[in-house]
Image (cartoon, rainbow, N blue to C red; front, top):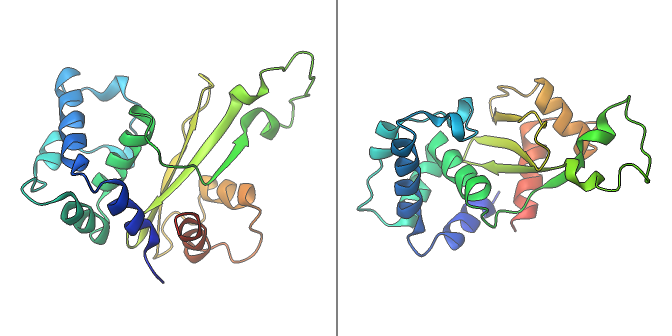
Length: 189
């Protein structure tokens, strides 16, 4: 299978903006004294400034991206998350669902819920060679951030978030890594 997502990353970051993003993330870490409480970064993205400084910024963006992609580095996920959520980057969501409509106790009333779109959750799926990182973004302040890394070896494939993802995508059979990979690759083809 062709790595269309890698081609997308290289195309979107061809102007060496990756080094700038790294510096922005490091600056944010310093600004918060290393405390990322103000930045909604959870476990797979919980990289340190030391980890970020290990990246050889004398290389081109294309070389850095390719290396992070081929080594399944969570730093690539951190950078993509940062570009999209913090800097409102151009990465497109794979699908959108409404968190209110998923609540079985929710009763929709168009008179009361005229701003129902505010509980829409955009779901992003990005990949490296052997991993898929899934995360959501919502305007709803009560949205509980969901994120997971699913590996080609099946790690986290049976987790609650993975199951919800397959349900939301309408995948009833072949709930595997390849199915999600095909969706990502088709999106960025």
